[in-house]
Image (cartoon, rainbow, N blue to C red; front, side):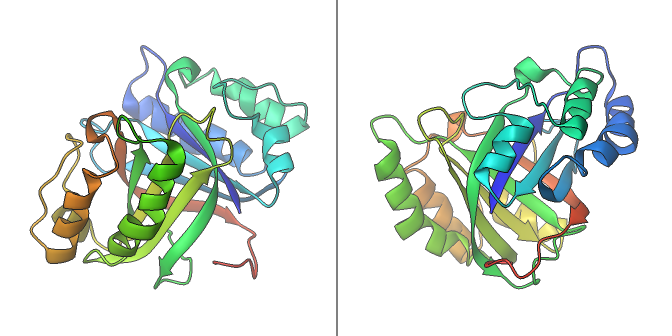
Length: 244
């Protein structure tokens, strides 16, 4: 399953409440019906005042061609879709987002653990936008992430779903990958991974602490944005897809 993640930054002069109202009432009803979208979800910050971004918008497609036609390809934050609803949604972006400050990521998702049968609506999610440490190439980073870190991360105390997203075009991607950890309560998330306002954290639970120590082996934590929020699923037409 291919996924487009937009890290939203509201345009200058717009208050957060006005941004969220526009996003929920005008933009999301459009975005969920973009041609080719099989799942659309948004993630709202649990603490907007300290969050690194104003929200996440995540759109899933069954093929990379469908994604590119709707939302463009890696290497550029802007895009010029030709399909009707995609074009209407792109036009609306200018009403509430600063697209030049809005990173995005296109990748293929892998589910490592799922104790909730894919039902992520209203769960709390920690999204880490990974940047490899200096001196490590992408292949070395990915090998460590897959073979050493993810087997730890999926077993962090309180995690009910763990998934990773690998860039379809690593040379042009804004990040080396995305790690997404879901929790049923915000307290569980905070105990495992810290709270908003800092990219670093100091967990006390055993597996969480081991995973945090391993972070230093392959990530540049100072350049690794993260986002803590509550997820809302607007559309889900994924049926009998492997991993869901």
